[in-house]
Image (cartoon, rainbow, N blue to C red):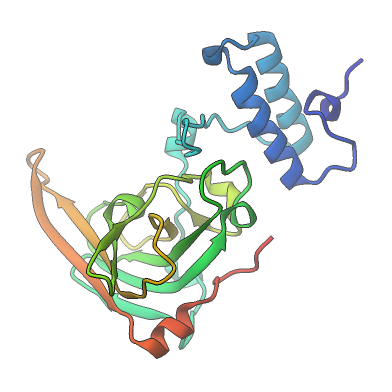
Length: 249
């Protein structure tokens, strides 16, 4: 009888990272929406769940390599935490406080190998600039953290570079509490968010990073307010921030 590891094309000594990679690759190949066998698809999910002891994520990849949230279970995943139990940070971080958020830029790293940062295949560009934020909702209302959509990177070439959807990983694909997904942030809760930038030319130096928080109107579908959090990147600041704020796998 085929073992769970054999179902994923792996040897029994394969580590967790290899299991996640194999699962995602086979998921794309055998998904029924792509003409694959539903029986085989379910067998791959079963093997993943039995080996790792967790429910298989349901992300689907687009043709440019982006991983979307896909399933309701993934969308409901809320990796928030009590900020009093968070890391204390250090002198290398920049913090901006506003009416709604206290936002900390914990790292801004260039040339990050995305395959080393997350589990799962990355079929487009392999290195990008990545921003790491610690986000604390200090307001009295639930806000939506949308780092990928609402973060802007300003280059010394006069161009604005936005967040990229090249990788929108499942929250467990990043170490510790870090996540690349949108998150509903309740009052006095925090989240550690990762934002991957559009491809930025090597010769470009970033002068500023800005996050825009949209605040919905409680009584309508419109906006009640918009607040912008701007980080000025002086040379020494850029140097201090050019580090990943957690241990890479």
